Amino acid sequence: MLYNSFKVLVAFFCVAFPVSAQVTGLGFTDFENSGALEAQEAFSRGILLLHSFEYEDSREAFIEARNIDPEFTMAYWGEAMTYNQPIWMRQQTERGRDALIRLAPDFEGRLSMASTQREKEYLKAVEVLYFGNEDKNKRDVAYERQLGVLSEKYPDDLDAAAFHALSLLGLAHDGRDYKLYMQAAAIAEEVFAQNPQHPGAAHYLIHAYDDPIHAPLGLRAAHVYAGIAPDASHALHMPSHIFSALGMWPEMAAANEESYAASVQWMERKGLKGHSGAYHARQWRAYAYQQLGRYADAEELLNDMMADVRESDSLQFPISYAMMMLSSYFADTNKWDSEFARIELDTENLSPFILANIYFIRGRTAVSDGNEEDARKALSELMKLEDQQNIALLLQHQLKAEVLKLEGNLDGAIELLEEAAKIDSERPLDYGPPEPGKPTHELLGEFYLMANKSDEAIEAFQASLERAPGRSMSYVGLSKAARIGSNEELYQNTITKLKENWKDADPIVIETYLSALMR
Image (cartoon, rainbow, N blue to C red; front, side, top):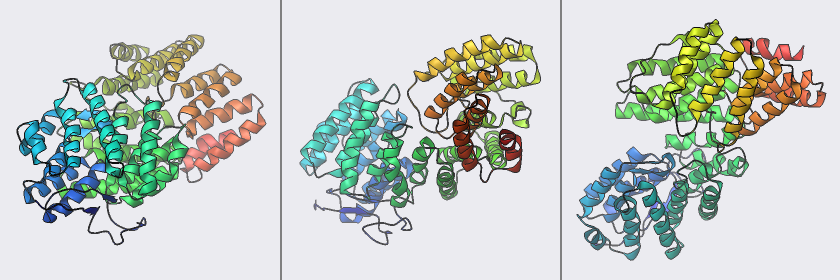
């Protein structure tokens, strides 16, 4: 078998280095392998798509490569890699094992198929990922250690380093872990410095810095990743993770407009009706529009999402995005009298997260109607639920507080929300649109305003903005609290930020909120 040192450069790149934002492609990396020359282009696409989490297309590319060269060891390795999705904590274990078994039925046989010691090391790593301990979390730990050995043994192999960084991110089984994420970032920074066109380096840096504290460190990667891999819809979306964490709403909207368009084109090529990439970009785009005061545009996207729910053969997947969008929409618009609040959905076989949002919306709509009986029925259903992220628990507290307010017990409602705020503060900082849709500290601040507690309200809104920077409704509340508390400097600073968010807002948004704040 001939040995090729092949530069993984997708053939449709117009230039090799550097790549401008206008160049169509997937990125650039070196990945030495012993496959046939005729299979290199397909293998190249597979590696680059894998780094951008385009798992389905990556898998097709690796399969194409092994069909061209049935003895192409690393093409089998690559296919197996597409069944492991560390950031999303998902693994199709049996399918990953099957891909490796197609190379050879046992580990020794697979090792014998590798032409170089480096390829053997890659096979050792993927072996522990799929055939190690029965506990996936323990396999993840063993995999990270094996990749660390591989990367140390071959310090010039930037892909080994990049995959090692990703494996560290995949160890955060209980939520964001700053120590792990910064270890991953340190590795990815080295890769990025040596190859600024490496899609994995930019991608994994964004994930590592994807929270309001570390997001400024990810701006450089965010600004270039879409230009590195503009043919990957996920790469077009990923910069918005940093933009969201910094309250950069026009940039977030634009990134997801591009990502959504690319996802739709992909679905048309595949003959599909729905896809996670399109739903994800639609959800984030709607959230950005809401922060920009473009409620009509957000409502149009929500209508599209609900149409997809009605037409989908598999309800669980699209409805999860629909509920996130609805929850966020109501949190920003407070339109509990809209038709979206009256949507009836079958609750059978839905996850606790989806159910929690459904029951909360039902209960909150009943509160808006003054219907205490229906509100309590929804609360009763909500209190039966629990989930790993405590979303259901926080929604229980929020709905209980609304019911207490309806009963005239504002002090009791505030006490309950103060407890919820403590629970929320103990959760790791997350990324993207907030969950629950209404940040607990923001709601607490609004209740403080009802009780004429401006100092407490200021503190609550500022806490909300620390966890979800740039939120327009937190700015609205903070402006009100600052004016009531005669804090002119804070009032002017906050109004200025709100005006920037809403410089292209719908006229009704300006009339309803901004004009009232400035009178």
